Length: 256
Ligand SMILES: Nc1ncnc2c1ncn2[C@@H]1O[C@H](COP(=O)(O)OP(=O)(O)OP(=O)(O)O)[C@@H](O)[C@H]1O
Image (cartoon, rainbow, N blue to C red; front, side, top):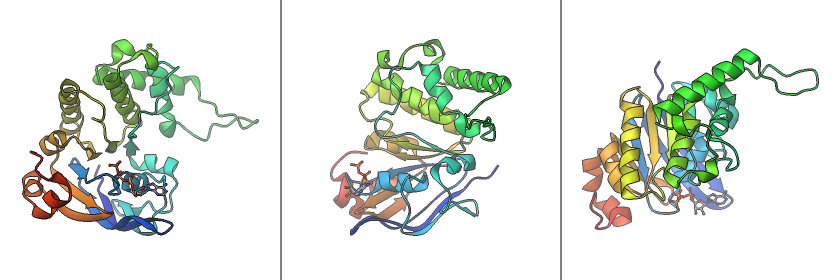
């Protein structure tokens, strides 16, 4: 099923600060797009606008031709959007499988409230949810850790669990906010292999914010560069690496 994300002239203001200014970008079905730029450029704010955590001041965010602007965050997952956060946001005292099941709520039938307003899932829904959660864990080589408490996992494994939690809602567009932050070189390689597997084999689209540029330049079909809230360049990785304005604003002499 087609799923094109279009961001058209989006601005996000915080009081007098224009965190994002008139930004436009597109992600075609199956495409992997990198969003890079210096600290404070507005990358996370744009993610938050797409996932409905901050309102846009102007502009439009569309999935195919449907505007998401007036839809609250919990409804956006029904349009096939899922995300991870810059800081790991797992319940440390709970097991891996319990954390994964939390990500399934967007797919369950929210009509099932009992007379006292308590949310109920039927036995068959519980079964389907658990089966799906185990499938995703297996896909991410986390099956053996399903019953392990999150606090006893290393950081790389916790990042993987976060991705698994985003995937159980069966998204068509995955937004990853700095998935390589805090990982060592070997873990970054593992992450790259995982992301290739998740996208290229299944047609999942991805928008990835990342400061580990070697990962972005290897993985992405296209790269969008934000600086001071504005898109200053969009292009193929080789074009971005050669772009004089991007080098001045962000890349400097970093080898890509
Ligand atoms: N909730 C908020 N209220 C006020 N200002 C904010 C808020 N969130 C972000 N900002 C400001 O908006 C600007 C963009 O921040 P944002 O976190 O989106 O940048 P970023 O590109 O993700 O940076 P980094 O690479 O460091 O994560 C910054 O000046 C930041 O201080």
